[in-house]
Structure formats: C-alpha cells, structure tokens
Length: 365
Ligand SMILES: [Mg+2]
Image (cartoon, rainbow, N blue to C red; front, top):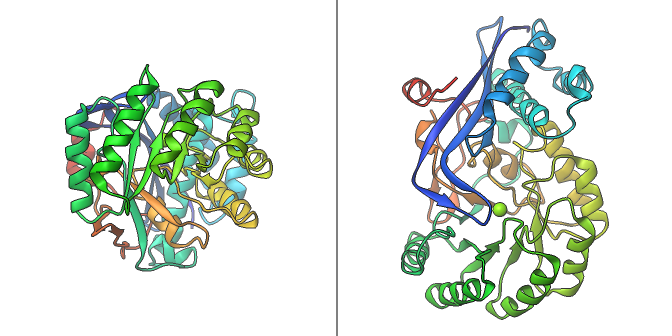
C-alpha cells in the first residue's frame, strides 16, 4: 500500500455560547487536520485540536514540509514515518508546538488507515481492554464565565443525565470566589459525585498552596493544571503538600517531559492528549510509562473524545475519559455517552471521518 496524496484542512466549529477558562476564551473549536489518500482507495483522516488560532500554521507545515515525505510511503510504516518527520527539516524549529501538533494529525491519519485496512475499530486494532465500561466525566457545565446560577443548573442537569463525574473551572481573580463556587457545586451535586477542579495554569505556587489546602474539604478527585506546565519542581512541591491529587498533561508535548513529571512524583493523574503529543505513536509510549509507575491515564480531549475513546478502551491503566460534546455532530460516527459511560464505536478506523456537509460548512482552509 502506498500514499498517493496528502491534503490538509482547517475547520472552525462554533461553540455556542462561547466559553472561558482561566486563560482561554473559545468561540470555536479548531480542527487542523489532514486527509491521507492511498493507492487502494482507503483514506485516513487525522486532526489536532486548537482554540481556532494558529491552525493555518499547522496546515502549512503539513502541506509544505510533511507532504513531500509522505508521498509514496507505506502507511503501515507509521513509526518510521514519525521519526522521519520529527527529525527531518522541521526539527530545527520544532520539537513542540506547531510542528509537533502537525505530526499528531498525520500520525492519527496513518493509524486510521491501518485500522480501516484491518476492518476494525482502532480500539480493537490496538488490542481491546474495556469494551463496555469507559467512565465519562463531563466538563461542559463548569465554565468560568458561567454565572453561579448557570453553573449550579448545569452541573445538576449533568448528574441527572447519569454522569457520576463533573469538572469545573476555577482561577477567578479572587480565589475566594472559586472557593464559594466549589462549595456551592459540591452541595448541589452531593457527596457521591466525583468532582474535579481545573485551574488552567492560572495560580502561582503560593496561591496553589494556600487555596489548594482550603479546597481539600470538598473532597476533590483532582486538582488540574494548577501552575505553569513547564514548572515540574513546583508541581512536585504541591503533590507532596496537598491531599488532593495533581492532574496535568494537556500542555505536555513529549514522553521525556512526562517522564520527568512522573518520575519526580509531580503528577498523579496523567492527562496525556493525543493531539498534543504528536499522535497515537507517542501517546501509547506515555501510557506505557505511566503504567510502569501504576499511574492512571485520563486523557484531556483536544480531539473532543473521538480518538481518545479508542485509546482508553485499549489501555489497561486508562480509567476515565473527559466528555465535551462541542463537535460530535460533524462526525460520521460521533462519540456517544449513555448514562455516564462511553458507548464504543464499531466502525473500522479511528472515528475521525467527517460528514461531507459539515466538512464544507466549517472549512476555513
Ligand atoms: Mg484542563
């Protein structure tokens, strides 16, 4: 089998209403992606996720630098291709960021092709582990720009829909307001629901130490991205001092950075994101690394779950998956959650194929 064409795309899918966390305002979810065409008629589709900024640079990397390497290659040689792209012309300016996320899109498209050839959903192609029970937790009711009333209404509805896990954003200018919101949410959802809070990197080490301790009383399942994601040392301090586990990974690019976090005990829930770590090839290595330290993997869904459902379903130490339904309507086989659990896809591939109508409607490149 040979690759005969490679075509990048950028889609901007509206988020209604727009949301904020402590550092992002998002009006659209961006899919910077690629379709890889083979001589046997099988087409692979892969993408990385953005807040709809900079994705044209990801597409340009694919078209201008990766395409020429891919044409004529056997898509089953995915690991050789990964090395060649990573250590090729873009290595000088790459290793993280734009070029790395472009590699994620390509790598995912190649795994999609392989699973399609095998006529298996990716989670079975990778070796299935949990066919029926992927616990979902819902992030889509806890945004920072929600009023307290809306926040309480949304988290209550999420629990009524059958979710047993809820995540909410914190990182208000005055942490006292965060404290009041977390307190109100815990009261609204009761003691049996798993509650996570996400700072999106906004706190200093001193704020995190003080308010992380105060918030312990609400039985938090984890404290997510409290600090700058490059600051392993201070995350380690927090992990040692707080009784709430530290979760992070959505802004960590490589297995080497994960190794340092994990080996130093600076992370307790590994949120490795396939759209950030240059695809499935590197994701599997990070998950294996976490397994050797007995750490759970709970991916952040830069892909909004389409690909990660396969990865969690085939990974022994992956325990739970985030749910945000912003872009599910655009896919041929969208993610599906029933009573708080992901229902796994059965179609061959990585669940990345996009309906032609939406591909056209949301395409900006
Ligand atoms: Mg997060």
